[in-house]
Image (cartoon, rainbow, N blue to C red):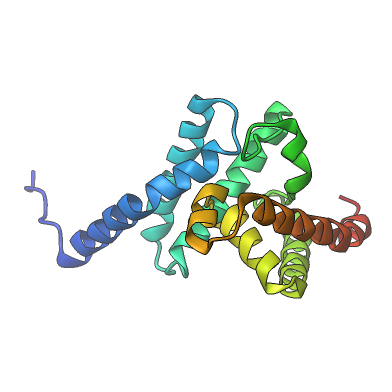
Length: 191
């Protein structure tokens, strides 16, 4: 029986990169998930699934571009998958049902749903990017910061000096535009 081979520098560097990324992103990612999932144990399960998938994907030969964006995209997909299974509605930022109008809740076809789902997913993501690019900068910034980066309205208000109500209104206008703009795409794809 051979003694175990020592880990090479590439494996150690890779593990150090993974650890640093997890430490850097875990808190933001956890907050992003917890704001959208009712059950704390479900939120923790999703977080663990995302981090596990990250570790596996990081070790593949193909590098992950924009790790933070990748993590939030995977988290959003896992949340959507969980809601499809449980038929729950995601929690809003404040926990009030009235805040639902401020949420886009984009339903994307599953990544592993075959060629038709992959096509529909790519069309929807391209349409979403176009629609986001059409937004006025102040609406686009709040939408991206809140929905994609998982930042809270209080944090954004203190950072920008803009009131929470103004930020909520900007996000609401962004969501209304995105819904209107994406509905024909959903209709064309029969989703």
